[in-house]
Amino acid sequence: MHIPARLGRNDVAALVVLFALIFALPAGSAPPASAVASAHPLATEAGIEILEQGGNAFDAAVAVGAALAVVEPYSSGVGGGGFWLLHEAASGRNIMIDGREIAPGAAHPDMYVDANGRVDSRASLDGPLAAGIPGMPAALAHIAREYGRLPLSETLAPAIRLAREGFAVDEHYRTMAGFRLETLRSDREAASIFLDNGELPAPGWRLRQPDLARALELIAKTEAKGFYEGPFAKRLVDGTRAGGGIWTEEDLAGYRIEEREPLIGEYRGIRVITAPPPSSGGVALIGILNILEPYNLEDMDEVRRTHLIVEAMRRAYRDRAAYLGDPDFVDIPLERLLSPLYADGLRTTIHPLRATPSESLQPVVTEQAVGEHTTHLSILDEEGNRVAATLTINTPFGAAYVPKGTGILLNNEMDDFSAQPGEPNTYGLVGSEANAIEAGKRPLSSMTPTFLEAKDRIAVLGTPGGSRIITMVLLGSLEFAAGGDAEAIVSRERFHHQYLPDHIQYEPGGLSKALRKGLAEMGHRFEEVGRRYGDMHAVVWECRDGTVEAAADPRGIGSARVREIREAVPAAACE
Image (cartoon, rainbow, N blue to C red; front, side, top):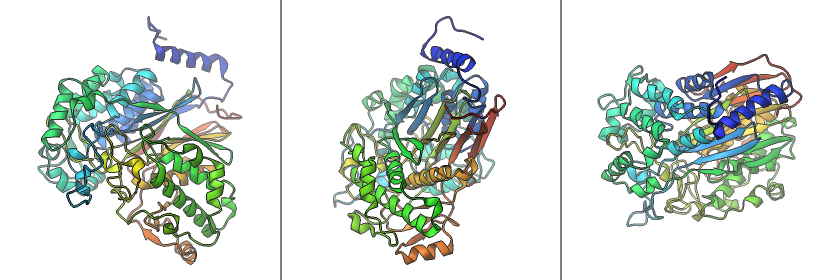
């Protein structure tokens, strides 16, 4: 074993873990395998590559996240951000790395409102005015420095290779690019990278991103400082301003990630560890589970069970719209929203046999479309470290704009703010003053990376899916509570209610005809989504038989791999 001459924080942590595993832990108290599940096979392989080089789960998360930024430009990117939920086995700590994008210094509440007082929805979606200051580079560098073992030059190597050498795009890439074709064409730099002579590339076309490879090399060499300061930062700022953006060099230099305490709840003996604000996901997830806690859902008929779940969803999304925003800017009544007593009160408003009209819960807004965006990765290593990370640039291909010569595809996360109180964003989600645009503020998110800890099993899960993320993680959590394995968690049929619009959305096959009939008799209304949605990835450690499982959502193109380390040994409890 190589021991460095000078031990840093990460080296000491690694030695502590090693000696603990050798001398302290009882048989079966650590996973017998490591596992990676992500939204793209090339990214999953990047994570396995880093684990095989001696990296831990945090190193693998850096590698997978960076690789996804290369191979899924429609879902995440170096020009975006996200939330990384970490569990450090040696200390037992849970940490959330908030790498969410931040509004530029010149941002203001009326920046997308025209002279007639109407919101210009395209301005918050297309082009550099829609872009917040990216958090992805800072977050990757922070995770590598504070929690990983390997240098960024190693963990970013797979992504750099994929960007430089390219990879063959598939039909899914073509579909996603088709959603933003005209917007991609409107920016010469973006079109030259992501389109084939201005047209949708055919499956098998090789996407090469040499400028992005150089940007990743700079991030590795400077631990991201070169992204936020110096010549590259100036090039980013000049490029955004040339397209009508408002970034400044001070905005980039002032970006900081935040380490936040995750939210912790409990549902029927399962500890739920999940994302705090500025994600709304954890608050809503725990709130829904608190409402459902007293019900024996598995003993109910399907109609009543679904009715109660929908009513709990409805109330949590109403609270999301009313109260949630960036905790560094607004006071959020978290203690109340997470309290079982508050859930008791909400539960009394649920009629067991009748749907509650959303307008009776304080109406806010009208309907707007819901889209797909974002990506997710779940990782467990053989020491018990784990990561659930949900990453994004918002809508497909973000702002569809690349500052010339940088290779950085900009996000359009400014659309996640409330352009006007009560005005829906592109996912139909509404907000109040708590999520109004403000310089230096982080927009509210639905991303919900989550750990579930039962006495004899642990799950790592999350998904993309816009406003439906929270309800997908909820349904996956209920599947876990019912004893479902990793495959069952990611495959479960899906339905969704987000308070407004006031109907149950469901994927094809998500609600049977008989179930819809029973719910309709209670007053529920429906909208079938055109295709199956979401892309959940989960890892489950089954301590009762000592095995590790990983599964990628069959709806997507992702993959999951388990890397066996030693023979599985049953354990009395997960540790």
